[in-house]
Length: 149
Ligand SMILES: Cc1cc2nc3c(=O)[nH]c(=O)nc-3n(C[C@H](O)[C@H](O)[C@H](O)COP(=O)(O)O)c2cc1C
Image (cartoon, rainbow, N blue to C red; front, side, top):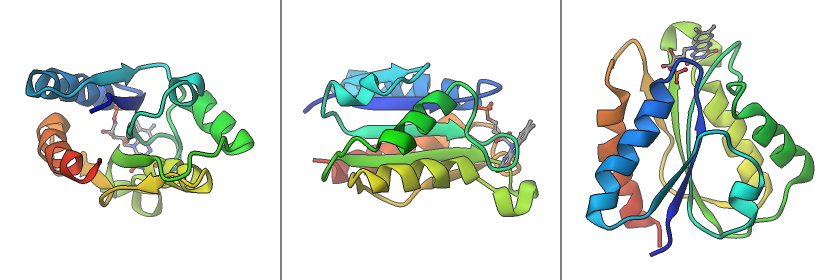
């Protein structure tokens, strides 16, 4: 199987740590995992790997600064990715109300406009409920991988 491309958006390191943990757990299981810590559009346009977004939410439902250039370029140029599988893990805090996990919604909308194919439900990880997002994420991704082919 091809590698998974993990596109990271993180302000304080929680989503980054989560992405790194996914790589640490999944590689010994035989999955290639490329963690893109400063994503650029070429991270997805020069290959056809399944895409996993692993981002937190900042501002008022916004994409973290390290992922923002990728998001804006994706949204502005919409390089078509018909049928390409992608999944979304988003960290947030439900005390933010309407903007809870908003960065995941923004990324999902942009990828759907490229005709990519969403696999699985978005995993929303609430900082009020868990202090170990990586544990929830590993379980979710192992199931997600069974649906990506
Ligand atoms: C300034 C600031 C703004 C935030 N805005 C939101 C928000 O709009 N919606 C949300 O769900 N979480 C929001 N959060 C919560 C973070 O997404 C959450 O704490 C997350 O676990 C941080 O992950 P990170 O360590 O990868 O940055 C905000 C946090 C901070 C500090």
